[in-house]
Length: 348
Image 1 (cartoon, rainbow, N blue to C red):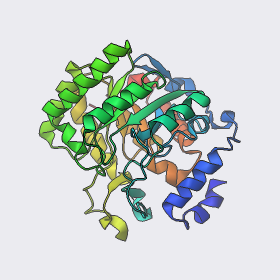
Image 2 (image 1 turned 135 degrees about the vertical axis):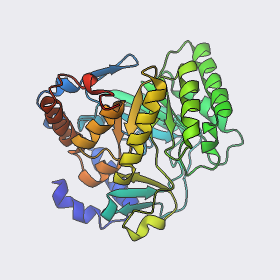
Image 3 (image 1 turned 180 degrees about the vertical axis):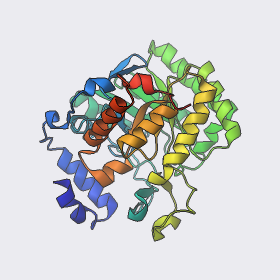
Image 4 (image 1 turned 90 degrees about the vertical axis):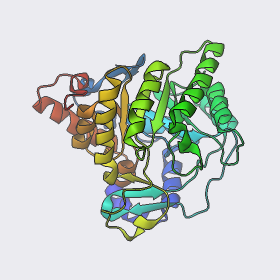
């Protein structure tokens, strides 16, 4: 069905097509059983005390305001991350702000954390009980005078309803946000968040989402901060605002974060580098260019325990997770691997 609809959808502005996809998912018509695959138990994995039916997750950015996460879980994803959520409702940057680079199987976005705000989104989750692992990605408002405090507000708001919280310090579309990659500023933020967890008596997993554009010198510093300050996992990576030279599409000069296939090897290299520094003490969630069983396996072999995707979902449609799961299981069988856990870091 998607192959029939895709030419129509791709004739629409990308954001209009996205809004149409969200509206259609609200009908929640497709039965989850058609997105299951044979021998899926090979993909079962437990991480930070949570059971994941498979490691293929949908990254933040698609369901920004928690409108269709249960419908997305029915499509076969092992987990879904909503957001980025800011304390106050935010329109984001002026349109147009999403661009399809079809020749490169990529997207560029400069959305700017558009979302309905914490109160509306929490009420929405309360009224629509999650039917799987749901992460909440938090960030600061554009006009805030205190970005650290906005992160703290996000944790206070969602610690009792999310399965994990992602601290998004890596978007290229919010000024000053990537300054939190500085070790001193990062540790200060994590200490503040851990104090809130202690005060609330909460053990909710905290996950850091890292930029692919950091200097290599930052890798050991971030890894050290994560190990010493009770970070549950690191997402590698977010979108990049560089790496445009080898792109084909004339849209490559648009300002914003690049995602999709061009990010695959960049992300893989970062996963390998972080994996050596983390030494199994903090798990990695691999993101950036996951579009097939092969690319999924490469990230796991590089050291990722879980995966996230977004851009390939735009290009491949509702069967994306199912297709990747099926391809991934075939690879595991060919390698003589009985469970996905055995493949983690195999290539490092």
